[in-house]
Image 1: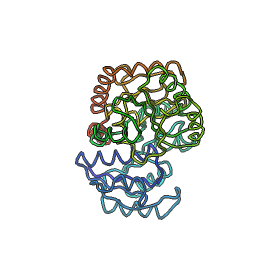
Image 2: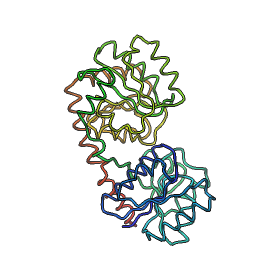
Image 3: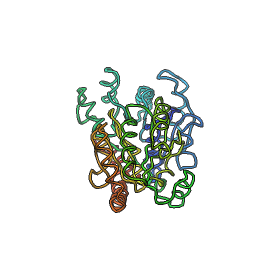
Image 4: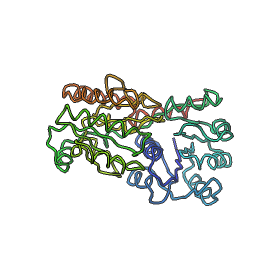
Length: 358
């Protein structure tokens, strides 16, 4: 099958990671894949060196004629069986181009609540395939009155090779942090703002540190509340056990340094790619029981689901996972779980089935 992906968003978002991983997955599965992307942006960098044929374009908005021309030119060269879109500003252009060139269109939606009411009503009906990235996200459209048969679910694929554990990398990261190999490292990776639950997580982690002297917390990310979190940590007796590295362009190597990952959101999440990536690296996940997060792990087997914002429950869960035997068993189960449900070839096969079905 020939697929032309269109994604000219230059920003670093979950949809960007999804775009790169899915395009790579379809290419690895043996399909002919092209991508029209923002020149030298994060998607371009992510796909450079892969088997995906890249073309440059910018869609400033849905009326940008230069974007239309770039997609039409790439489509005439590749002659794809499907156009695939991932970003809202390109939904209408792809639907119009698809009609013009008689190519079916598959569109992914990553956000809830849904689009503006008119677009939210029309786009799932005009695209030949409309896909949400979780059952939670799908339900948002059904609640708006979109017929259930029009909204399919396809989870984010994960490149297992890129996420594999690396003991040498773990030693290097721990050494850079001034930690020995016996350290227990709780990790957080993501935006630093209140809705992500970073402040309850800090309180829970600091309380757990009072009982577990080998416990440290590694914070990866930046955002509007990063400074406030750093100030709170600096004033805490556990200050030297909270390690802030800021925004990291490629967090995948850092999973090797983690003993467990926290996904503590108090605001709803559409999915939770970081949870799946960490488990692929053999890292158990502590996740909030909210939104699409429960769909990313097997509770009690590959991690634990916890009440959002409940500091006492999170403290106890962190301490529970400080048990080396439990960490090892959950980590092994986590890797197997992701390989069976979210690996590139698994998701590529499901996507092909969705595109090929009625």
